[in-house]
Structures are given as structure tokens and as C-alpha cells.
Image 1 (cartoon, one colour):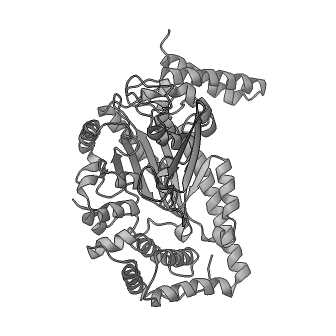
Image 2 (image 1 turned 90 degrees about the vertical axis):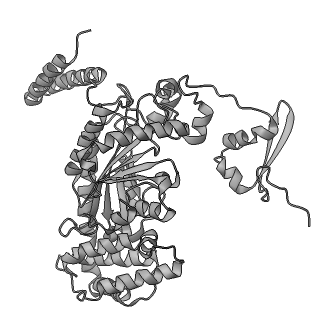
Image 3 (image 1 turned 30 degrees about the vertical axis):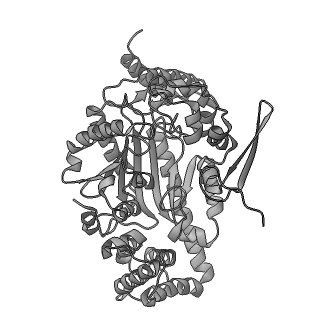
Length: 357
Length: 160
């Protein structure tokens, strides 16, 4: 199994028609876990890290969910392959930049477990659209299955013991990737971010910590992990996502109403540029694809095209383009390949019409 | 033109100049921006980097007996060394935890096979208080639910 297999395989986030939803792109659960009796990866010696990896790897191999999955050691992958995994959110930048980590990814790419990242184990479950309960249930099952065969570091007072004080307790980071062009265009994002921060939720760009919100996509997640039960954390995130979705719809409707022809014109121009450009930077294509995604949500373009837009967003990232070419390319070459792919994909797209919602 | 100072850790031009006075003696250190920021750019971290040249060691005050991790390392990385570090560093981390976390008592799941008695006791205490409030507010429905929960918790907690 190679990274090329991951790229070639159809999966929920890029291909599954009907799984995509307006506004919420995906739901993610992450659990941080560590083995008892070993230093955390950042402080462990190479031999200890290897021992940890063997134990975790062995436990994961036995789980039915990872049958025929991808078992990847970071030191056996090329720079490009590792970058693809980061762009897919299957592994973190931190894991990819070190050589001693490993990742186990389920065949359908819904579940992935990072070994020897900041913690010994980072269990991750991702589903397209808004499925907090379903995602959580899978993560809980994986967690139970792993803790049945591995001795997990846990304390009554502090819960699951993690390398960083910001993860101790439940070790749970629940998040949603949300597409908020309406709130961005009406300049409400700053206010929204402040409100979310005040209630203990973090707002990040689409590649996580320290990244910009390309394509008006934001990752919303809980910050606190100790002193709140998983149930409370999930409920709080769920409550806020519901509010955000409502606010985003309101902002879009208001924009469409107030701007009239200018609103449709903006979306149509984006389609025009994407359909005819010969060079597209990553940022430009993300922002214009964001307009098209909003157009699909609002009936300006047929909804069935939404999954294609999501796929273009994911596959238009630099490492994805290079991996498809099988070699590294200069940024202008990448912009040209990106533009060609987008042009071909959108060639048969219908015209943008006035919103129906 | 005068010659620029060289970074003490690499060959680049030094742009960060620090003066440290230790026991009445003045030590000057010069770093390029990259080397200075590698050290975290905070005074403590930069001076830690400076140890080699100034021969003044900042002594760790807390060390984990299991993995030999110390508080200087924590200041550098913001992460602990091993699970056993937690009880060792808990006192020193109280302030930080109070800032970033909700409360210093875990109330969530536990690994398979671990009965978190402390958690159950904690919940029992909470439920009793909640029941008293419910009764005072004449919310008998909630009070009955809490009474059942308390009975359930009491069966789970082994008698000490």
C-alpha cells in the first residue's frame, strides 16, 4: 500500500456523492493516548520510540477496522508523499516532519492513527459533512479496542495523561471544518471568532494550527480537555456549529438580497475565471472554488456538483499536484496544471443562475 | 565600514545582542535571529542557549525520577517527559492548567477495565448537591432522577 493508492482510492471526502453537505465540510474527532511506562515521543530515546511503535502497530494490526489498511512509516516515505498525507489531514505536519513516526490509515480513509507524534497515539476519525455522533462512536470503539490490548496512561484526577497540558483529561479534540463565505464577505468573522474563543472554542485555518483560512474554510474545535466530560465537549461544539450554520445562511441570504445582481455576478465571474484561466495559484483557486461551493448550496449551480468542487479543493493543493505528476514541479508549472485540471473539470458546468434559497 | 559581529552559534551576522550580569560580572552574547529564535526568543531560553559561553548554568528545580525530565526542558518545549512527570509537575502546572482548562478534575471516560473511583465519588458529591438544590426549588422530577443516580453510584463505589 502506498500513498499513490490513497490518492487513487475514492473516498467520502472527495468522491461520495450525497455525503457532502452545505457549510459543514467534515467532522473530526481526535483522541490523544499514551502508553504507561514509556516517555512521551518528544523525550523518548530512539530505541524506546521504536518499542512504542511496535506495540501500537501490533495492537492496530489486530483491529478489523484497519484490515487491508495503509501502514506507513514516515522514514520510508518521500517528502512529497508525506506532504500529500498532510494536505489530506491524514497526518499532522509534526508527524510528517519527523522521521520516527508512523501512521495507520483505514482503507476508506475515515480512521487514522498517528504513532509517535506529540503523544504515542493520536486516534483520528473523519467523516464528510456534519456527523458528530457517528464520528464519536467510531472513535470511542477504537479507543476501547486499543485500551483492551495496550496499557494506557491514566490518572483519576487528570484523566488521560498527555505530553502537553492542553490535551490532558479527555485527550479529545472534536472539530468541524466549516465553509463560511457569507460571514467572511459580510465581515462578521472577527466577531464570530471572538464569541467562539470566549466560549472555549478555537478557530483555525483549514490546515489546522497556524494556517490561513484559504477558501473561507475554518476549523472549529474545543480548547479545554480537562474537567469537562466528552459529552459536554461534544454538546458545546454541536450547539455552536448549529448557530454558525444558521448565521452563515442568514449572512448569505442577506448578501443575496442586498447585492442582487452583484451577488450572482461575483459567483459567475469566479466560474468564468476558473473555466478559462491558464494559471491558477492555490489561494486564487481556493477562493473561487469557495464561491462555486456557495453557488451549489444556494441553487445557483446544481447541488450535484458540490462533491466535484470539494475534490478540486483537495486535489489542487501543491503536494497533490506534484504527486499526480510523479515529480516535483516549480510553482508556475503547478499553477498551470491546476488551471488545466480545473478547466477540464468545469468545462461542462452549467451557467450560474439566481439563488433559489 | 566596521565589521559586523558574528553569531556565536553559527557563521551568520549577529543581530541579537544580550548582556547578562552574573555575580557582578558582565557577559555579552551575540546571536543571529535564527539561533536566537530557536531558543524560543524568551530571555530565559536565550540565556539557556548562552550557558555554554557564559558558564552560568540555570539549575533545574524539578526533575522526574522516572525519566529525568526537568522544568528547564518544560520551559523550552511546553511538553512533559513521561506520564510519571504529571504528579511531579502538577504543583508547578496548577496556574497554567487553571488558565487553559475548565477544572482540575477529570470527569470523562476511562480506559477499559479501569474503574475511576475518584471520579465516581466526585460525581456522587456533585449529585448530592444538585439534589439538595432541586428539592429546595421543588423540582421533584430532577430530584428523583438524581436520587436514582446516587443509588446507582453507591453500588459502583467500593466501601472503604
